[in-house]
Amino acid sequence: MNALEQIKKQIKENSILLYMKGTPEQPSCGFSSQAVNALNQCNIRFAFVDVLEHPLIREALPKYSNWPTFPQLWVKGELIGGCNIILELLDSGELKNIFNKAELIK
Image (cartoon, rainbow, N blue to C red; front, side, top):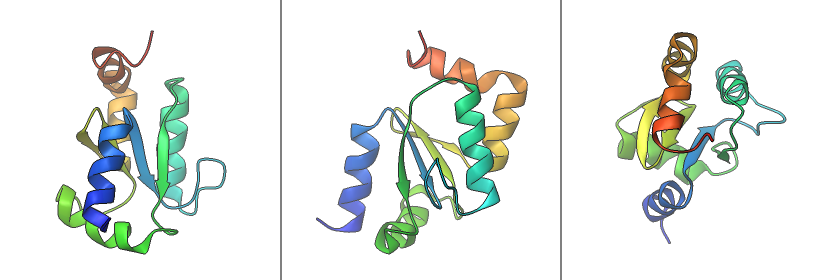
């Protein structure tokens, strides 16, 4: 399976997916750390892919998503955005609304 096929499969199989640098327990960049903190504030479970451990995905995802940076948050197959957008959505309350509309928060 090539990187693009892996990306499509990961996005399809995970309702909430964060492509990040590092892991939620040990983020490897400040932006990934802030994104994880925002998701944790919403009290939701999410899957993640450490792009530092998967260089082919790290290379292919920006082309697929048309989004050049990491982290990238995907919800129900749709790209939400990167760190700044995640934080803006959290501050406005819209991030929880996205999860509620997708029936990911009960």
